[in-house]
Length: 142
Image 1 (cartoon, rainbow, N blue to C red):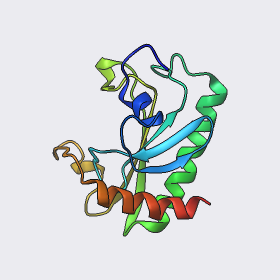
Image 2: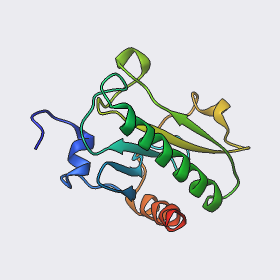
Image 3: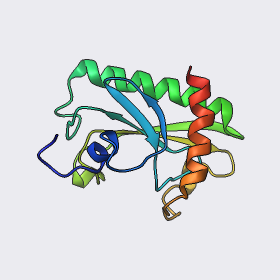
């Protein structure tokens, strides 16, 4: 049990609900509850590291490998995905809001590309559609 408050630790330990796509002993991936685009998900180490400055290099490498694998799966199952943004923020000034290292995987279509990312507001998604997207991507991973 961690001695600090962390939303991602709570998700990993089952205290908060999430739509999981991937899980092994070191890395989890789940749908972002405030997606920028359809299929936006997060790659998170099971062990708590605040940022890239603390995470061990071998775990960082494993996380990016999972991000690649999930990006390929998402592109193959989501409609009209033509690109993917891999994003990782470190520190408040860089836009990090949850201080548990994580990588965003954000699929894009031509009609809703990265150019519109900063003008749209993020809203909480309903759980059922997130579960459906997670299931589609999960099937492609295994």
